Length: 375
Image: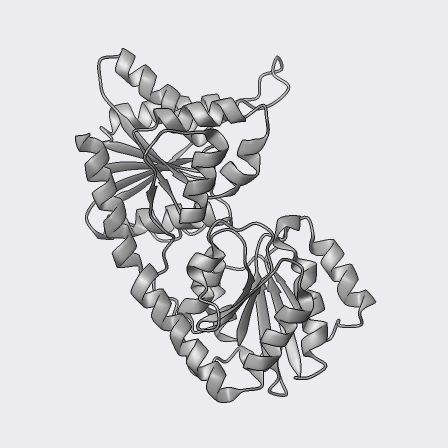
């Protein structure tokens, strides 16, 4: 099968999943064509059946802003026509499903066929898509998609409710390569972050306000009162400066490691003991899944798709948004009880392998493509 994939090539979960999906499909013998304005962040190795097509954006004096959606449409038409793409898979509704819809119409006008499927990842529906000016366009492009998937039941219900869509949406959760993301004994990096054997909390995100990264710092401050603890913050974004200011203000500079954007996620997770995700909006929580695959119990909020991932009092704990005291209490409970921690760690790893392993989920996408093409 020849599959075109369009995604944002950045550190966000949608780009990561789209790239890992393309790589996994290529391993299963499919021919993959990525169409984006930049090489996807995790597309780091050469493979004979993976191709990249760059969307070139021209800057004309007449236009105040770059016309990315139209440039993307043109590139989709070009690639699908000349590479004989069987199905186009777009990740994130805005503007990718809109561009795919236009590309399909152009190809049909030329006497050929194209089907496309849209995967909804979260903020394209819960935040961006609810901008009043975008809502009719997003609704129309989703309904005109030949197939639609969502990464959680929460996101599926949110989409159906918010947009009054009468369209079948298949839930296919995010996945993780459990052969790559797995526990490693005696991680050499842990000595660097915790030289005196302290426990290590970790948070990985794009540091947007919705991630509530300052809450992680406040949780550290409470945990430190009971258990010697350090904190790793990996990622970057608009809230990083505020987080650095807060660390200085709370006199935690020696206890917090800001790593910026990192690709060595497995090493970071294996240097840590507990993953903290205090988000106020999260349709799935890919970074939490990667942590669970590495055997890290997760403490998260009770919103969005997180309760579908984190099993309370089994693989981690769930608390209300902003309940720093309770999240800190859960962290202290796990970090000060070796047997309980070991049980939660094993449960987290087991759940990642059993429910979200790459091979299991990629097969679901293959079946989805077949259904779309035969519909």
